[in-house]
Image (cartoon, rainbow, N blue to C red):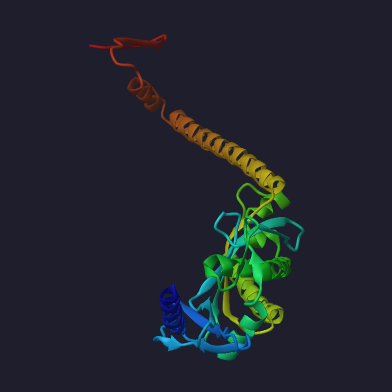
Amino acid sequence: MVGAVVSLTVLLVAVVPGFAFLSGFTKADGGHVIVVRNGGPFDDNSIRQVIQPNSSLTSTGLFSTDHPYPSTQRNFKVSAAENADSNEVINVPTKDGVLVGVEGTFYFDVNYTDEKVMSAFDDRFGTRSYPVPGGDSRYAWDGDAGWSAFLEFTLGNLVQNVLRQEIGDVECADLVASCSLAANPTARAVPVVDPTADGNQTINRVQAAVNAAFTDDVDEVLGMPVLINPRFVLSRVELPANVQDAINQAQAAFAGVTESQAALQRAQIDAEANAARQSGYNACPTCAQMDILKSLPDGLTTYAPGTGFTVAGP
């Protein structure tokens, strides 16, 4: 019995420190930066070091905790799609009061090379968890799900406010050309095209304004420049049902008007052609009779349009 106790004691003394020693090393892959926090029994819980991507095996001390954050380009998707970060379309009013649904994606880089910024970020956002769908919660460094939960919790309202501000400076027709049909259903069936108009310029201007506003606001919200080089790409502008119905009705009306105008033009052309043809016949009655003969059906042997004029076939 005594021997078994001694053997167990020796095993614990040898194995436990061995596991602890092995756990005191880590390395960062190419897509993550690791913030290491002290965790030893005699240490405080402060940040020990920041390990950059693609590092070699690095000593982190016994019982330390690794907080891996993404170092590659990340995005925040605003869409009703299931895989989106917002999981909903953001509805914002345009300058002329049309409530449009906006979908797009924010792309940004993580300022992982600045160790002071990453340390401050982990102090502020890496020590608490964020809700995820299903009622659970995760830390920002706990995989892609944790990072997405952090973005949704901290950036959701910010993104909506930025889009509301910038979309509110442009009119609906500048974003969706067909909006002008709903605003002016009595417009001409064949509108005059403005050669200087360029919807892409408006989209680019909105995206640039969103980028500038997002940069200023995100640094203020987070308290540090950890998300840098933001780039917003507007992918879709959805019109409300009543506006889209008005556009569809206007387009249908335009189609009917255009068809009527084409029929009228055909009738005018036919009338002018008939008048010219009749004028020629008046000058050459024989020509008229020759055209009549050409139009006779095959197999007709006798044609007698009037007294004194008979044509007999062979």
